Length: 147
Image 1: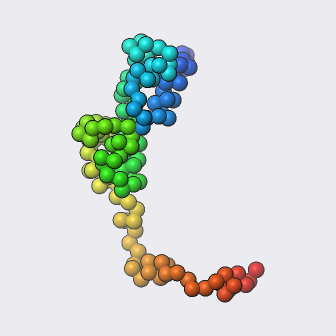
Image 2: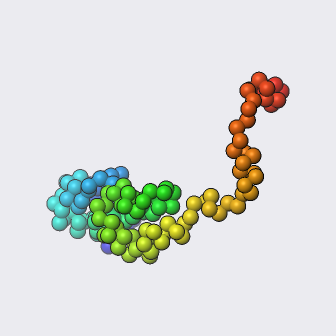
C-alpha cells in the first residue's frame, strides 16, 4: 500500500531510498538498503513495499534502468558499458529487464531516440563556413575596435 498523506514515510525508509537514488551504480543490494534503514532485510522489504508500493529490489532496478535509458539517449556508449555503468553485471539480464520495463531492447530504444544531429539538415557549405577558423587576432576584429 503506497504511503498516504495521513501517514508520513518513516525517516529510516527515506534514508534507504535516498541511498538507492544516490548510489544505484554501486554494488548495492537489499541488505545494504536494510542496513541503511537499521532494519533486518525481510522486515525492511515489507516496510519499504508498504511505504512506496514497490519492493526495494524493484525500486533499485528502476533507478538503474532510468539512468540506462538516459545514457542510451545521450551517449554513444555500448550497451555492455552502460550495463556496468548503472551497476548491473549481466548484459543478458539487463536487456531482459530493460525490455520488460521500457517495452523494447536497449538497442531498439537507442534507435528510437537518435541524436539531434541526425535530424538537423544543415547544408555542408554552412557547416564548412562556420567550422573554419578565423585568421584574425582580436585587434583586427572590427567588433573589438567598436567598443
